[in-house]
Amino acid sequence: MKPFIQKGFEKAVMLERNDELSIALVKDSNADFALVVGLGSMEDSFTPIAKLLTKSEIDSMNPVKEGSRVIDEWFKMVRGSLEGKTAKDFKANINHPLLTEEAIDKHLTDNPID
Image 1 (tube, rainbow, N blue to C red):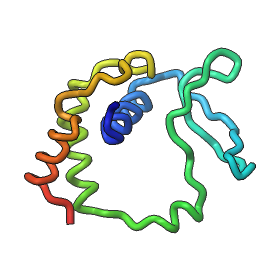
Image 2 (image 1 turned 60 degrees about the horizontal axis):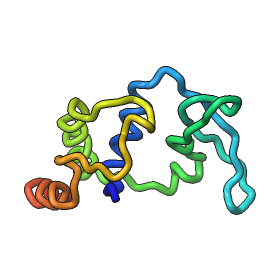
Image 3 (image 1 turned 90 degrees about the vertical axis):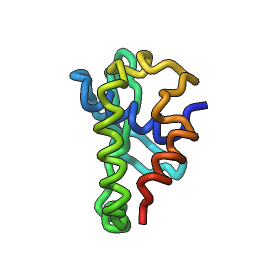
């Protein structure tokens, strides 16, 4: 199973590289409406990638600046070696060597997040 950080990086790459982005209206398990960005269309095949945040969700977040810097630098390093732009391009259960649990642990040991 891929670690969350790899799945997150892959989704960011899909958003960055894909020209077939769509927005869908969805209902969550609480029957609340939300907007989701994804690839494709509802008529064809829609793959959700990210939920658009509400103002209250944004206001409830506290940025982790140093951690964000480390993650952003790491993403810039890994981005070039992630190939593909759609969900089917990123093979299930194939871990990227820089995004394994061991690589993540080593990277965070070398670049601690306060």
